[in-house]
Length: 166
Image 1 (spheres, rainbow, N blue to C red):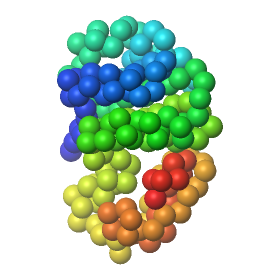
Image 2 (image 1 turned 30 degrees about the vertical axis):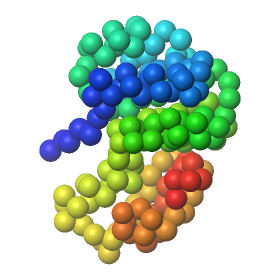
Image 3 (image 1 turned 90 degrees about the horizontal axis):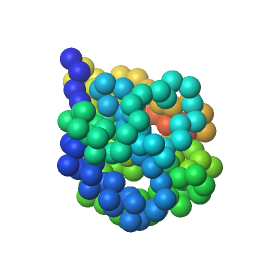
Image 4 (image 1 turned 90 degrees about the vertical axis):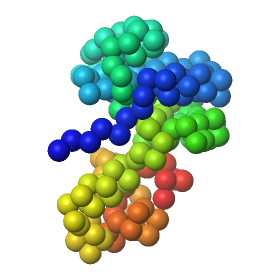
């Protein structure tokens, strides 16, 4: 069974307005169930980023729910962007970054994160903290207290996490 915990189009528009006000000069890409798409000004930096290119409203007309929004500046640091985004998106969406030296934020639906999704999946399978450990991401390992992440197992490792993600 697949559960989608996405951002409805109306919320995507609210997030976009808030981000443009809080951190001007960026552009969006969207990860949807159908794949990757982006605004013309968004500059992808990895292979496999092909997909529709159009203004945000046109992209949203093609999909009712967005899994994740990506917001990129041509320059800047993710830590500065994240601080501004957290204030602007409080109660609306969950901004994070995975590389402090990059100028990219990832924005998910309110309450959705790697940790919360893992907790939901574990609970659906009848698993608790005693049943194992988890490892997320690829580099920049940051160990965090299991009690801080929904009671997940001891030794949980989150890689490429922003310092305040703990």
